[in-house]
Length: 483
Image (cartoon, rainbow, N blue to C red; front, side):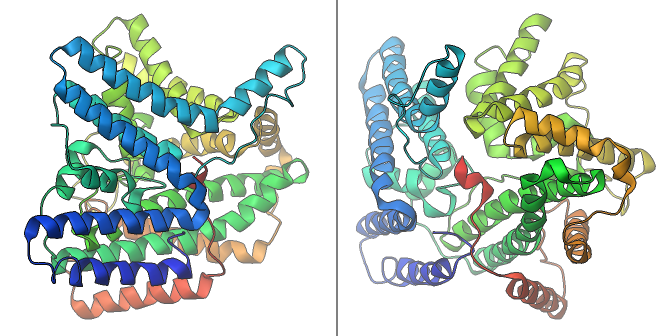
């Protein structure tokens, strides 16, 4: 089920009403009330996911069962060695399922190509389950944290299943940690009006970024990338710019809707985006982009490898590994590995010179506009990120190379073609999004308007709602569903 679909527009209020006014109000015993409320979350989440393909519900159930059982087994053993063994059993089982569905066919075809053999009889040709990378990593973090002693294993299987399958963030994150989300399912939740209203604002902003910005950019992007060899340099450049905002509006829009929806149920999810296109270097960009994934790799891979407290050679190795794994996490294609390598090359000079933590303060703190130096750094970082997105979006390394070559010719100075009449409205929506987020860059999301007069607030809400209704065509899927 898509957040931007009419089905979800009916699903959400029904689940909300039952959650608060049936399973919370009319059941007297608090412990029974909590278990039934959590059970209702699990059922609702499985309906939400099963709306796409009910057959893959078994995978979520198995992932949840493996991880919950591993936590209990880790908690019962009397030695660290045995605890690690059970942790690794869970890691192997869950990564095995992920590898089977996501990477098996890719590597079989690549090996067959390498040895000039046929792979037809070995391919599984299975559909990739939506969001499998997200909930798998969430499950892995639980057993790792239990083994590390950061969280006690829970015996409440209902609460644990709710933690893994919580529908707002089930298929595209944020990738939650058990230390943050699981305890929220183990205690009674109270409805807070102000939090719920803020959640509705965040949902509205997320829908604007997805429907108005991302989906309109996608129309032009898809047309240009599908026929890139015959496009002018200016059209290719404009499509690259549009894709840069498409993937941001699409993914951060999903995160806003997910976090806002969770607030309606008294659940606080971690932040996943912090206005990344206002970054002043690549290191700052990665602290602001897909935060739940980058911090996951930092805590569960980079630091165990030694982090930055190693020799220069090992530091280079650790950095390259992190970015290669990050690229591979996105999908079974050489373009994702190339994209990860590209960012590793950009990141390495900063970490080797100790400048990767140079920009930790908010940009233009205490000022309305950035300085010329800040504006230049943000522009340069944006261009570098955009050039990387070309590799990410391309179907192959060859297409990405041809795309770069197509941009760098005399036709770059021509007027972009392919639906040029629609370019200005799209650019206008992008500028509006950037202006709002620049003004709100020290806030959690674009519509955090606590100190704005109610009349002005409702004018903003109405204007955004009108834009969403006007530009809504059909429920377009989210880019990160494929990961």
